[in-house]
Structure formats: structure tokens, C-alpha cells
Image (tube, rainbow, N blue to C red; front, side, top):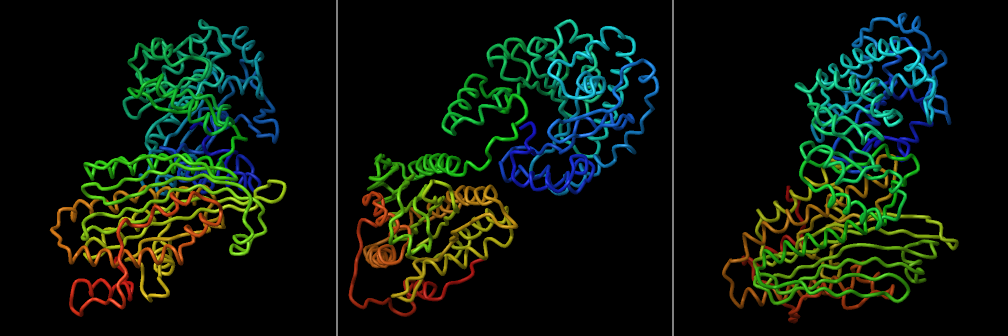
Length: 606
């Protein structure tokens, strides 16, 4: 997104309070930190180098100041032919070396996780600032200069163009995977003047670069020039929200990749409206030769911490994905959906499958509940919060075949509010764990390796920590054994000096996405293993221990029951058939005894 590393990010604002604008631009370490910031916090598909289009005037020895609350200011604007003639020849590599160092450092930091985009302003847009001396709604002084001194204006435009070409060529050579040219003020010109004072110079830039690096051109308000732009050897054209997708396609003859055109101000809408408008935009453009994006830069006051809305949307999509995958593996059973409402606020969407070819019973439920915090839970959670909000996805799958393990997963977000409704706390939690009835060590290693791979993307310290917490949480105290062979368990994930709310949300989502890759290969490997009634007997006996843990120790079960949650959905985790036999232990040396030994002495699997 344009301006994706900007003022809407809390971490950006911390650096903004500490360093001036050009300190951040001209210090490669800071520019790198800011460039990488949105990758995990927002989840964008590419990094955009943190810089500014006005480094070009600075390279030309034109002083540029960034005045707080006002924006760019040029104390000595270019207004005469003599000033244009006095502009020096530029050694771009020397004058803008800090930009190129930032590119190299950023590429090293990204480690090819996502591509890096570099940018520059169009020559016309740069001229607007150099002549006007500051931002403007009309840039009438810049226009006057072009109309009354066209020879000087074209000389200045050519100077800017030549400098920009050299600058962007070096950006490409240092590692930028694509280049975008912004014509922020081209829409102020008439179509004829646009060709004269802007497009012909953009065309020179594209011609000079396109064989070496993909070039994207964006002209704000320049819909009238899309047909001419599409004739340039560009890789994509950006469009803003002042043109419909159909018109943009027609103007460009359906031959050019288009990027855009979501109105940035619409990011201030409720999340559900944003989702609706985004889907409509993608439907209207179609997915052929299209990059979904904003129609201009993201606004500074767009909230990035819509955690509960974002996570609610995520868990519903994850529910759809998991249910579809499980139905495909089973080949017979289908999930039956049940919508419910909670007295006091909120509700959920429960889905249950029964009597399948592979799965005897499975439940995948999402819930979004809110209301007054029960006194018992206040005491248990040691909180003064009066009201709460909780959303999450919870699933338990009980296979028919005793050689296929039962699996559980839960991913959730919680907020608490004071008496006047102000948010006073919030955290993420979740995890997944495997409960086999017969131990296959390669399955255990695969399950844990998948969890570790997902966690490692967000820190090498996370998997060992949350694996240990899983072993501790799912310890069935009255039986002196674990419920299963573990996985990961995490709770109360809050912003700290190392990770923001957005970081923890990205981690929780990553772990949710790892569920299917961790579990389905095990199911596919074991679902046709022959079994008999002795195997079934042992499965039912171990299921009894599973039920004991859920009803006696599990915090999620107790929370749901104590907050007037829907009992049927809360207890969907219980298996259809269980067994309790008095003082029953497996014989030494059997496969059953091998499992119990591991449950009583949890292992490190990888």
C-alpha cells in the first residue's frame, strides 16, 4: 500500500517522536527499520523503501525542509531561468548514497521474504514543489512558471528527468525488485498540458528502465491519460478511486495490469463495510492482470489496531477453510451449521460432522461474545474489568480409526473494558495439541515440526516456550499424565518491548494456518490402517481420560459455561463413545503401554 510505512503504525510514531523526518530518511538503519515494519504488522505482500520523492531536489542542491504540521517547504523556490541554469550536475551515487545503503540493508533484513519496491516522483510533481515552494491545492505558481517560461520549465523538467533516471537505475542495481513513479499532481493539468509537461517525461523514465526492472506508473486524477499511459512499456498502471474498474479496463484495452483503486478514506469505515467494498472492487476488476491496492496513500489516522474485527474475520475464514478440507478428506460426512445467540451479547457459528468415513465426530466452532464479566471469572482472572469481548475458533476432531489421533485447536482474542467502556486490556491466545491412541513417533515429529516452522517465522524463542506451556497446561493432574503428546499452547500475548499487538495477531494467525498442514498428512497416512475391537476398546478408554481433562481442568470449557455460552457448542468437544473401567492399566511391553509411558513422561520431539 502507498505510505504503508507511515503514521498509522504506532511503532512508526515512536520513531517519529524521536527523530526528524529527514533523519529517518537519511539514516539507513532507521529507513530499513521503518521499511520492514509493515511486513508482519499489516501482512502486506511487498516492502516499499522508506524515503521521499524530494530527495531529488536535495540532490540538486535545493534546500528542502519538512515543517511539522505543514509538510514540505522550500525556502528558495525555483522561479527564474537563471536559477534553473545554476542547478549543478549531480553525482547521484554520492549525493543519495544513504538511499542505496538503505536498500542494501533492507534486502538483507527481508532475506527475500517479500520483494522490495523503490519509487520516485514524476518530474512534473517534483517541479510543482520546487517552484511552488510548498504543498498546494492548485500549484498555480508552478503552472504560471510553465505557461510563462516554457523554455526554462522544460529545461528544469529535463534536469529532473535525467537525475531521476540515474537515481532509479541505481536503485534497481542495488536490489529494488520494482520501481513505481508517482505523479501526484498530474490531475491538475488539462489533457493537452499533461502530455506537454508530464507524460512525455514519464515516458523517458519508463523507456530507460523497463528492460531492467518492472515499472509501475501511478497518476493521481489522471484517468484521462490512461489510454496513452497503456501504450508505454509499463508493467502496471496505478488507478485511483475517481474512475470505475470497467472504465479503467476499457481505457487500457484490457492489456495492462492495473493496480488500485480502493479509496483510502474508506479504511475509516467499519471493518465489515471494508470487507464488502474490497470484495466488490476485486469482483469489478477481475483477477486477471490485477493488483488489489489503495487508490492513493494510506491516511495517517486509519486505525491499525482493529484487532477484534480483524481477528473475528480471520477465524470465520479459517473455519471455512478447515471444514472444507476435512470434508474432502472424509469423503462422506458434511458439516451441519448451527447459528446461535448468547443471552447477554454475541453468538456464534457451530459446525458439526458425524458418522463419516474417517471422522466419527468433529466440531469446528467460532464465537464472538461480549457482555458483563461474571464475578467468579473476575476473581479467577484477577481483573477489575467490568465488561469483556471474546472471539475465537475452537475445534476437536475424533476419528473413527483408533490409529488416527484426536486433535484439538483453539485460537482466540480477548478484550476487557472498564465501567465507561474504555478498553483496559487485550490479549491473544491459542494452540493445538495431538492426542494419539497409538504412538507413531514420525507423526509426533511431523506435528511438532509444523508447529515449530510456523512459530519460528516470528521468533526462534516461541516454539520451545509454548511447547513447554502446552505440556504443562494439558497435564491431567489427578491421573499424573498428559492428555496427549502436546503441541503448542499460548495465552495472554500482549504488547511488550519486543512485539506489538499486530505482531502477536500475526503470530496467532500463522499458528492457525499451520493446523491443516500439521494434521492432515497424519490422517491420510493412518486412515486405512486395519484395526479391531481391542483397538477400539483402548481408544474408548483413552477418550474417557480426554473427557476428564475437559470437564475438570480446561479453562476454555469452564469460561464458556460460566459466561452463559451455548452448552451444546461448548461440549461439542466430547467424543461420541467413551469408556471408564475400574483401575485399568495396559500390560507391560504392549503398544498401549508404550503410549502411556510417553504420556507420563512428556518428550521433546524435535
